[in-house]
Image (cartoon, rainbow, N blue to C red; front, side, top):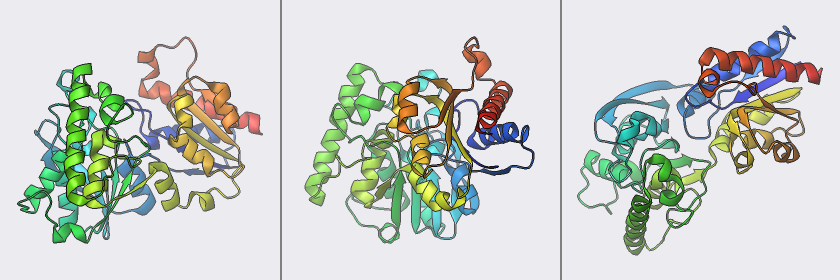
Length: 353
């Protein structure tokens, strides 16, 4: 039996690597000689560096930057030759803030700009930026300010030699525009602590910034897919740094040549914390399914809803790892989650045999 395991992180519980290892144990318990290939994955958010380091190698660079409230924090990025991978949550992530500190009118993406500047100074000429898990909704103005400061730019519109020779690729599964009902503030602001009034202010602030920018550049990328990612950081990369936007999981799977890797596989196991109809809107498991080319694909998750829709989409197995009676506190325990993943994947493999 050949099995490919590519499970997203279960946020607050297991990393992608830990989830994959638990699934592998389940396979080995019934098939000790199975060929198991574990693929750390991320769609641009948590675990992005981990996934790309497993894919392309390189060294982790640690640098002190500013967190969303401008406090010093140590953040990491990956450097491999002239390519750098940046996970914006390292500097501008929601997990860096306590619950009562979440206020997107106050938070800034400045630290992300510092990571970009440091990578460029270390020789990076292609930056792959994972946009996920941000605490900010500043349309990337904080990041741009950090680049101004780092390269001593007097005006926000000036070209910088150090940046004009750099190619940017942003990785995100978010297709929202910058502004409007489907924009960054309205859709993602509330989960970052925004009240209804704050959402209106944030949206207006982003709209004004985009209008001013469009007048200067002569083009407007505020409606481009991905502009609303990470509180509008996607927009700043698209408008100011001429970035290419790619689906995070598609970019990773292309990088590791997933189709070649999975040739001859009897089963592909993927998963996430919660699987439902939103999974069908381009989330990580759908990226895996799209590369499966007719192979059996099992989707596991800590919570399952819309199961029939997921099966109709093409997943051969859609399984919840948790028994119905378990409490959330118990389910979030690392050892419990690992045990439940192993058991679930073992049961799926038994059905396959």
